[in-house]
Length: 278
Ligand code: NAP
Image (cartoon, rainbow, N blue to C red; front, side, top):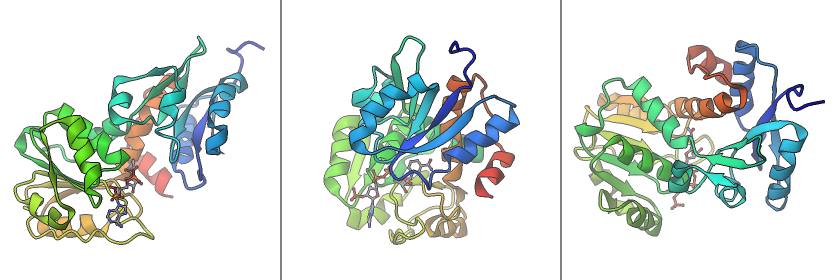
Protein backbone atom coordinates (compact mmCIF):
# COMPACT_ATOMS: atom_id res chain seq x y z
CA UNK A 1 0.00 0.00 0.00
CA UNK A 2 1.50 3.38 -0.94
CA UNK A 3 1.14 6.43 1.29
CA UNK A 4 -1.32 7.82 -1.28
CA UNK A 5 -3.73 4.92 -0.67
CA UNK A 6 -3.76 5.48 3.07
CA UNK A 7 -6.63 7.24 4.74
CA UNK A 8 -4.95 10.26 6.36
CA UNK A 9 -5.01 10.33 10.14
CA UNK A 10 -4.63 13.32 12.42
CA UNK A 11 -5.29 13.87 16.10
CA UNK A 12 -4.47 15.68 19.29
CA UNK A 13 -1.83 14.63 21.81
CA UNK A 14 -1.92 15.79 25.42
CA UNK A 15 -2.41 14.45 28.92
CA UNK A 16 -5.20 14.48 29.89
CA UNK A 17 -6.85 14.84 26.52
CA UNK A 18 -10.42 13.65 27.05
CA UNK A 19 -11.65 17.24 27.61
CA UNK A 20 -10.29 18.45 24.27
CA UNK A 21 -12.81 19.97 21.87
CA UNK A 22 -10.47 19.54 18.91
CA UNK A 23 -12.00 16.19 17.83
CA UNK A 24 -15.41 17.88 17.49
CA UNK A 25 -13.92 20.67 15.39
CA UNK A 26 -12.03 18.36 13.06
CA UNK A 27 -14.81 15.78 12.72
CA UNK A 28 -17.23 18.57 11.82
CA UNK A 29 -14.92 19.77 9.05
CA UNK A 30 -14.11 16.25 7.80
CA UNK A 31 -17.83 15.52 7.42
CA UNK A 32 -18.67 18.92 6.04
CA UNK A 33 -16.03 18.78 3.31
CA UNK A 34 -16.48 15.06 2.65
CA UNK A 35 -12.80 14.39 3.37
CA UNK A 36 -11.60 10.82 3.87
CA UNK A 37 -9.74 10.99 7.16
CA UNK A 38 -9.94 10.52 10.90
CA UNK A 39 -9.06 12.66 13.92
CA UNK A 40 -8.15 10.86 17.15
CA UNK A 41 -7.49 12.10 20.72
CA UNK A 42 -4.36 10.44 22.17
CA UNK A 43 -3.28 10.57 25.79
CA UNK A 44 0.53 10.54 25.64
CA UNK A 45 2.71 10.59 28.76
CA UNK A 46 5.68 12.97 28.94
CA UNK A 47 8.19 10.10 28.77
CA UNK A 48 6.61 8.66 25.62
CA UNK A 49 6.27 11.95 23.78
CA UNK A 50 9.28 11.73 21.47
CA UNK A 51 8.74 8.06 20.62
CA UNK A 52 5.07 8.74 19.90
CA UNK A 53 5.86 11.68 17.61
CA UNK A 54 8.43 9.65 15.69
CA UNK A 55 6.04 6.68 15.35
CA UNK A 56 2.90 8.55 14.28
CA UNK A 57 3.96 9.29 10.66
CA UNK A 58 4.73 5.59 10.15
CA UNK A 59 1.17 4.78 11.24
CA UNK A 60 -0.35 7.08 8.63
CA UNK A 61 -0.61 10.30 10.60
CA UNK A 62 -0.18 13.49 8.60
CA UNK A 63 -0.08 15.73 11.65
CA UNK A 64 -1.28 16.34 15.18
CA UNK A 65 -2.39 19.14 17.44
CA UNK A 66 -0.54 19.40 20.72
CA UNK A 67 -2.08 20.44 23.99
CA UNK A 68 -1.11 20.71 27.66
CA UNK A 69 1.45 19.67 28.92
CA UNK A 70 3.44 19.07 25.72
CA UNK A 71 3.25 22.40 23.89
CA UNK A 72 6.71 23.60 24.96
CA UNK A 73 8.52 20.26 24.87
CA UNK A 74 7.58 19.53 21.23
CA UNK A 75 9.80 22.42 20.13
CA UNK A 76 12.84 20.37 21.17
CA UNK A 77 11.60 17.31 19.29
CA UNK A 78 10.59 19.01 16.02
CA UNK A 79 13.05 19.24 13.12
CA UNK A 80 11.67 22.56 11.85
CA UNK A 81 10.11 25.28 13.95
CA UNK A 82 8.28 28.31 12.50
CA UNK A 83 9.31 31.79 13.56
CA UNK A 84 6.00 32.35 15.33
CA UNK A 85 6.36 29.10 17.28
CA UNK A 86 9.87 30.17 18.26
CA UNK A 87 8.50 33.54 19.39
CA UNK A 88 5.62 31.95 21.28
CA UNK A 89 7.90 29.38 22.91
CA UNK A 90 5.46 26.58 22.15
CA UNK A 91 3.74 24.74 19.31
CA UNK A 92 0.21 23.42 18.95
CA UNK A 93 0.36 22.10 15.38
CA UNK A 94 2.79 19.48 14.10
CA UNK A 95 2.90 18.47 10.45
CA UNK A 96 4.64 15.26 9.40
CA UNK A 97 6.23 16.08 6.07
CA UNK A 98 6.85 13.62 3.25
CA UNK A 99 10.63 14.03 3.71
CA UNK A 100 10.31 12.75 7.30
CA UNK A 101 10.73 16.13 8.97
CA UNK A 102 8.48 17.13 11.84
CA UNK A 103 7.34 20.72 11.34
CA UNK A 104 6.12 22.63 14.42
CA UNK A 105 3.91 25.71 14.26
CA UNK A 106 2.03 27.84 16.77
CA UNK A 107 -1.39 29.02 15.64
CA UNK A 108 -2.69 30.34 19.00
CA UNK A 109 -1.66 33.92 18.19
CA UNK A 110 -3.29 33.94 14.75
CA UNK A 111 -6.37 32.22 16.24
CA UNK A 112 -6.56 34.99 18.84
CA UNK A 113 -6.20 37.72 16.23
CA UNK A 114 -8.67 36.24 13.73
CA UNK A 115 -11.23 35.82 16.52
CA UNK A 116 -10.79 39.45 17.54
CA UNK A 117 -10.96 40.78 14.00
CA UNK A 118 -13.98 38.71 12.99
CA UNK A 119 -16.05 39.41 16.09
CA UNK A 120 -15.07 43.04 16.68
CA UNK A 121 -14.96 44.39 13.14
CA UNK A 122 -14.20 47.94 14.33
CA UNK A 123 -11.20 46.81 16.38
CA UNK A 124 -8.10 48.71 15.39
CA UNK A 125 -4.63 48.18 16.89
CA UNK A 126 -3.87 51.90 16.55
CA UNK A 127 -6.74 52.87 18.86
CA UNK A 128 -4.65 52.64 22.01
CA UNK A 129 -2.97 50.46 24.63
CA UNK A 130 -3.83 46.83 25.28
CA UNK A 131 -4.04 45.44 28.83
CA UNK A 132 -3.31 41.76 29.35
CA UNK A 133 -4.01 39.84 32.53
CA UNK A 134 -1.82 36.74 32.80
CA UNK A 135 1.69 35.85 31.64
CA UNK A 136 1.51 32.13 30.85
CA UNK A 137 1.92 30.38 27.51
CA UNK A 138 -1.28 31.79 26.03
CA UNK A 139 -0.44 35.36 27.10
CA UNK A 140 2.85 35.06 25.29
CA UNK A 141 1.08 34.17 22.02
CA UNK A 142 -1.37 37.05 22.55
CA UNK A 143 1.44 39.57 23.18
CA UNK A 144 3.34 38.45 20.07
CA UNK A 145 0.24 38.79 17.90
CA UNK A 146 -0.82 42.19 19.31
CA UNK A 147 2.69 43.60 18.83
CA UNK A 148 2.78 42.18 15.33
CA UNK A 149 -0.61 43.78 14.59
CA UNK A 150 0.86 47.17 15.56
CA UNK A 151 -0.39 47.81 19.11
CA UNK A 152 2.03 50.41 20.48
CA UNK A 153 1.77 49.69 24.20
CA UNK A 154 1.00 46.47 26.03
CA UNK A 155 0.27 46.70 29.74
CA UNK A 156 0.89 43.37 31.40
CA UNK A 157 -0.01 42.12 34.85
CA UNK A 158 0.37 38.68 36.37
CA UNK A 159 0.05 37.22 39.85
CA UNK A 160 3.67 36.05 39.63
CA UNK A 161 5.41 39.25 38.64
CA UNK A 162 8.65 37.62 37.48
CA UNK A 163 6.78 35.92 34.64
CA UNK A 164 5.61 39.28 33.29
CA UNK A 165 9.10 40.74 33.77
CA UNK A 166 10.47 37.87 31.68
CA UNK A 167 8.01 38.62 28.89
CA UNK A 168 8.92 42.28 29.03
CA UNK A 169 12.59 41.40 28.62
CA UNK A 170 11.75 39.17 25.71
CA UNK A 171 9.34 41.45 23.84
CA UNK A 172 10.91 44.81 24.71
CA UNK A 173 9.87 48.24 25.89
CA UNK A 174 6.43 48.26 24.25
CA UNK A 175 5.48 45.88 27.08
CA UNK A 176 5.02 47.56 30.49
CA UNK A 177 4.64 45.54 33.64
CA UNK A 178 2.08 46.41 36.32
CA UNK A 179 1.80 44.84 39.72
CA UNK A 180 -1.02 42.30 40.13
CA UNK A 181 -2.35 44.22 43.15
CA UNK A 182 -2.81 47.24 40.84
CA UNK A 183 -3.99 45.42 37.74
CA UNK A 184 -7.31 47.34 37.74
CA UNK A 185 -5.43 50.64 37.26
CA UNK A 186 -3.88 49.57 33.97
CA UNK A 187 -7.36 49.38 32.43
CA UNK A 188 -7.59 53.20 32.33
CA UNK A 189 -7.58 54.16 28.67
CA UNK A 190 -6.96 50.58 27.51
CA UNK A 191 -8.69 49.87 24.19
CA UNK A 192 -8.10 46.12 24.16
CA UNK A 193 -8.40 44.07 27.34
CA UNK A 194 -7.56 40.38 27.50
CA UNK A 195 -8.00 37.83 30.25
CA UNK A 196 -5.20 35.35 29.53
CA UNK A 197 -5.30 33.74 32.99
CA UNK A 198 -7.23 30.57 33.72
CA UNK A 199 -9.38 32.47 36.23
CA UNK A 200 -13.09 32.42 35.47
CA UNK A 201 -12.94 28.96 33.95
CA UNK A 202 -15.58 26.57 35.31
CA UNK A 203 -14.19 25.09 38.53
CA UNK A 204 -11.63 27.90 39.05
CA UNK A 205 -11.89 31.12 41.07
CA UNK A 206 -13.31 34.18 39.37
CA UNK A 207 -10.98 36.91 38.13
CA UNK A 208 -11.28 39.51 40.85
CA UNK A 209 -9.45 42.43 39.22
CA UNK A 210 -11.64 45.57 39.69
CA UNK A 211 -13.08 46.70 36.35
CA UNK A 212 -14.13 50.21 37.47
CA UNK A 213 -11.51 51.87 35.22
CA UNK A 214 -12.70 50.04 32.11
CA UNK A 215 -14.08 52.43 29.51
CA UNK A 216 -17.06 51.56 27.32
CA UNK A 217 -15.08 51.86 24.07
CA UNK A 218 -12.71 49.00 24.94
CA UNK A 219 -12.93 45.61 23.23
CA UNK A 220 -12.72 42.96 25.95
CA UNK A 221 -11.90 39.33 25.30
CA UNK A 222 -11.37 36.25 27.42
CA UNK A 223 -9.34 33.20 26.43
CA UNK A 224 -11.47 31.06 28.73
CA UNK A 225 -14.42 29.56 26.84
CA UNK A 226 -16.04 27.37 29.52
CA UNK A 227 -18.31 29.10 30.38
CA UNK A 228 -18.76 30.89 27.10
CA UNK A 229 -19.55 34.16 28.86
CA UNK A 230 -17.28 34.43 31.89
CA UNK A 231 -18.16 36.76 34.75
CA UNK A 232 -15.34 39.01 33.51
CA UNK A 233 -16.97 39.29 30.06
CA UNK A 234 -20.44 39.75 31.57
CA UNK A 235 -19.21 42.67 33.71
CA UNK A 236 -17.43 44.23 30.72
CA UNK A 237 -20.59 43.89 28.62
CA UNK A 238 -22.61 45.65 31.34
CA UNK A 239 -20.07 48.51 31.21
CA UNK A 240 -20.94 48.89 27.52
CA UNK A 241 -17.80 47.25 26.12
CA UNK A 242 -17.87 45.04 23.08
CA UNK A 243 -16.95 41.53 24.24
CA UNK A 244 -15.49 38.55 22.38
CA UNK A 245 -15.55 35.06 23.90
CA UNK A 246 -12.65 32.61 23.76
CA UNK A 247 -14.33 29.86 21.76
CA UNK A 248 -13.61 31.59 18.47
CA UNK A 249 -9.87 31.55 19.21
CA UNK A 250 -10.04 27.79 19.68
CA UNK A 251 -11.86 27.38 16.36
CA UNK A 252 -9.60 29.69 14.37
CA UNK A 253 -6.37 28.18 15.76
CA UNK A 254 -7.46 24.79 14.38
CA UNK A 255 -7.91 25.93 10.78
CA UNK A 256 -4.23 26.02 9.65
CA UNK A 257 -3.71 22.40 10.78
CA UNK A 258 -6.76 21.18 8.87
CA UNK A 259 -5.55 23.00 5.79
CA UNK A 260 -2.02 21.63 5.88
CA UNK A 261 -3.12 18.05 6.65
CA UNK A 262 -6.25 17.72 4.50
CA UNK A 263 -5.66 20.39 1.84
CA UNK A 264 -8.78 22.50 2.41
CA UNK A 265 -8.98 25.84 4.20
CA UNK A 266 -12.03 25.33 6.44
CA UNK A 267 -14.62 27.92 7.52
CA UNK A 268 -15.15 29.08 11.06
CA UNK A 269 -18.86 29.80 11.24
CA UNK A 270 -21.91 29.40 13.39
CA UNK A 271 -22.47 25.80 12.29
CA UNK A 272 -19.03 24.90 13.62
CA UNK A 273 -19.66 26.77 16.89
CA UNK A 274 -22.92 24.88 17.37
CA UNK A 275 -21.25 21.55 16.57
CA UNK A 276 -18.61 22.21 19.22
CA UNK A 277 -21.08 23.47 21.81
CA UNK A 278 -23.66 20.72 21.33
P1 NAP B 1 -0.64 28.75 31.90
O1 NAP B 1 0.61 28.87 31.10
O2 NAP B 1 -0.77 27.68 32.92
O3 NAP B 1 -0.91 30.17 32.60
C1 NAP B 1 -1.94 30.34 33.53
C2 NAP B 1 -2.09 31.81 33.85
O4 NAP B 1 -3.19 31.98 34.78
C3 NAP B 1 -0.86 32.40 34.52
O5 NAP B 1 -0.76 33.76 34.17
C4 NAP B 1 -1.23 32.25 36.01
O6 NAP B 1 -0.55 33.14 36.87
C5 NAP B 1 -2.68 32.61 35.96
N1 NAP B 1 -3.39 32.10 37.15
C6 NAP B 1 -3.73 30.83 37.40
N2 NAP B 1 -4.35 30.74 38.61
C7 NAP B 1 -4.38 32.00 39.11
C8 NAP B 1 -4.88 32.57 40.32
N3 NAP B 1 -5.49 31.82 41.25
N4 NAP B 1 -4.75 33.91 40.51
C9 NAP B 1 -4.14 34.68 39.56
N5 NAP B 1 -3.64 34.19 38.40
C10 NAP B 1 -3.76 32.87 38.17
O7 NAP B 1 -1.91 28.55 30.94
P2 NAP B 1 -2.10 29.12 29.46
O8 NAP B 1 -1.78 28.07 28.48
O9 NAP B 1 -1.44 30.44 29.37
O10 NAP B 1 -3.71 29.28 29.41
C11 NAP B 1 -4.35 30.34 30.12
C12 NAP B 1 -5.84 30.24 29.84
O11 NAP B 1 -6.11 30.44 28.43
C13 NAP B 1 -6.43 28.87 30.18
O12 NAP B 1 -7.71 29.07 30.72
C14 NAP B 1 -6.55 28.19 28.82
O13 NAP B 1 -7.59 27.22 28.77
C15 NAP B 1 -6.89 29.37 27.94
N6 NAP B 1 -6.51 29.17 26.54
C16 NAP B 1 -7.51 29.30 25.62
C17 NAP B 1 -7.20 29.15 24.28
C18 NAP B 1 -8.30 29.31 23.28
O14 NAP B 1 -8.13 28.83 22.16
N7 NAP B 1 -9.39 29.98 23.63
C19 NAP B 1 -5.89 28.85 23.88
C20 NAP B 1 -4.90 28.73 24.85
C21 NAP B 1 -5.23 28.89 26.19
P3 NAP B 1 0.83 32.68 37.57
O15 NAP B 1 1.90 32.88 36.55
O16 NAP B 1 0.96 33.58 38.74
O17 NAP B 1 0.66 31.24 37.97
